[in-house]
Length: 252
Length: 281
Image: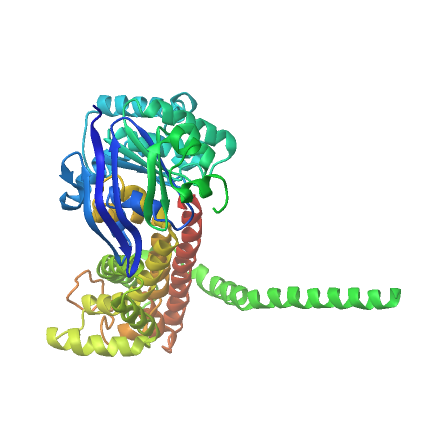
């Protein structure tokens, strides 16, 4: 039996009075790639940002219900510890413009003031960049600023930065929506390799992408989790009419 | 048809010539002032001028070392007071721009910027000079620090507001605590802007005279003590330019030249540094 990494039961989230995530129940298993899709404003990004406690950073944002990482309630853990364990990659590549490529990868250690022998850091940088399929492109330009890279490379640098912390789960918030098709393909290729070691949760607007990369797909509509199933099942024989309407393009 | 186009073209050319001419005209006052002060002041400046204190009436020679050192000390101490407070307040304003406290303190910063410098001097006279019982370099620094504050606060705030939220989110998502996000990511990324604010505020206060009249007071001798009256460049210029002795007036010209060079240096270095250190987002 697979091990459940992230689970939500009756989980709700609000922005002020606006109820954006409604009674979500979901179990996400280890080393799976889960796509979260749905029309704009359906609460999928909000749900994702609750998982690593980024939701609460927005003034007026609240959440209620149970959300667990393994057996620990995420909302009673120290948010800093949660974010060590659950990494995140954002919609737009956001490498630190004041840091070199090398320092960007180990930013999680450096900015937290965790000191380590240089040899260990070198090892982490090489390993993370290799996992993010960026090592060969940047290994001779380590001292250059992270923003020197192209958009797709920057996004892979951000993935390397998340991997470097060796999290349990990596959240992706529309990770390719700011990238060109070639960069998108290279990032998608990565997902297949990353799920060997990590659990991936990917919010995407792009149905083809969900179909290409994920094992399971969750469909959100108006704040509710309408359906959560094997991706193949979902795209061939969805059980809910709303899912069917979305997939067949009757609304978006 | 052709005639009408011709008229239009002529109008365009005329308009363009007028604005080019005006753009040139507005540079004239600066150029004239610069050239005149250089002409009058540059001949005064030599090693002796920079290292000696003013000579008593009747003696020739003398320099402005007391005022030069005094200005540097006073501005340095004012910066030590104003820069940390200003940067921290600027961080607060940019981080909490929607709170009521930020609105009202922002308003106060704007009003503080408009408070006449002589009024700041008077307040410091009653708050610092009177209780301490003596004019002092320190009281002058406090007065100048108050004048620096609004510029440092606003420039820090404006610089940090321009940084995208995604930068902060990137750091927070790595489990970096808030204070380290500010100190290790936000401030370093805005460093060029914050620094240029500091430099410009120094350029702004180094020539202030009014608040120093009844705080730092002035001193014909070399002093490095914070608790004693101290001479400053603008105060020396004010005193000596209006004196009846030609030697002293020349001294004032020389001091004006030095002061002007200071301000020019600060402005130009700021421009160069911000270009060099500006971070490409």
